[in-house]
Length: 162
Image 1 (cartoon, rainbow, N blue to C red):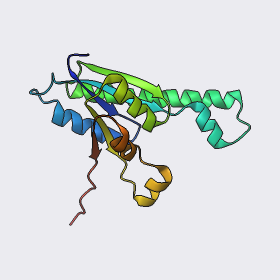
Image 2: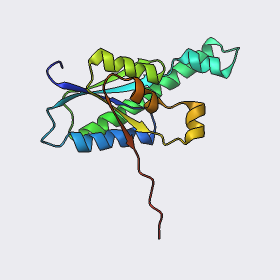
Image 3: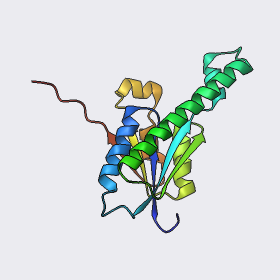
Image 4: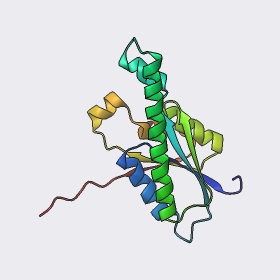
């Protein structure tokens, strides 16, 4: 994969990230550009122990196993859908799928460095200022900290019916 530029596409299980995948494949991978990039689709998976800590004390090994299984199913669902999307748009070559455990902000910035990515593509959840302040914004963090160009694909709001 060293001879081509690397494009990282961040996916979670939201419609916003799949919009970003669709938009990117439609705009960057027409027949004229198909060979310019190697694509790495990254799913940042929250560590199961973090989920248990949020839920509070008393988490048993059974709960940990249930959470772990659920996180694995989510990652499988994300990649199944991503692979179907890539196949449908005939972007099959030079695509790698990787699950990395950790906080999405750190996972994505570290992956940019690891793969020497030229561009990082993310979807925008479209949070307002209050939600963004409380929940944080992965795309905002990456735009300021990733060592490459960052493209944030924002799903258009539906137009009001007349």
